[in-house]
Image 1 (cartoon, rainbow, N blue to C red):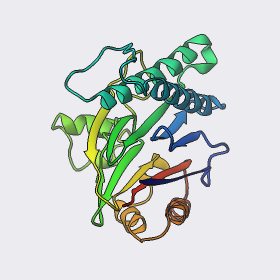
Image 2: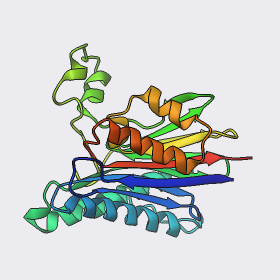
Image 3: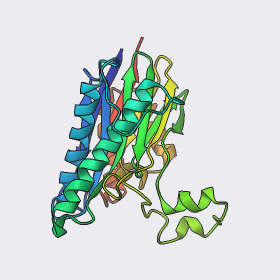
Length: 251
């Protein structure tokens, strides 16, 4: 059985909350989307992305009657293909909306999502919102950040000054940034009492991972953990919207 809880907060600086979350226990689908674009366009991008993903995951529940508009990857599972397709459809929806009028130019959204079935999860992401696994008191990031810093690190060109570079958090891709995105997918088996944390950079960008891990492993109820994580981000200045979705596998 998976218990879940989600919370989103405007933070201390922004005038509107452009984050959106989805907690759909029936589908086993959990999403954090961090919209961008300003003038309410970030909110629209996040809402479009989540709606597209939710619709496709629901319509593809019958695995014998599924269409694969972006092709099928035989190297990954059916659920991983469903996740990748759902993110691509979210990207297409935001991309098409951005094409309709000049004022929508630059709109986009990060996506970090988990599709849970029994004791197995499929993780998908684009952008820098993250999914963490908390097991035995240790926090492990399951997603890949689409940032300038990660891109140069992958090329072996990062140095000690890179972590302070003004472009270190610049997004190299997000849903709506181009016609097709590179969706990161992974699959993981869960153990009893494992905790999954999905969050926007309004949390992980300002609160040290050690503090996040200490809060997630505090033994409190999921609602209390979520509230405490939001409090920590706000105490650190809350420069961005803060979104948290928590999952726990219980015996």
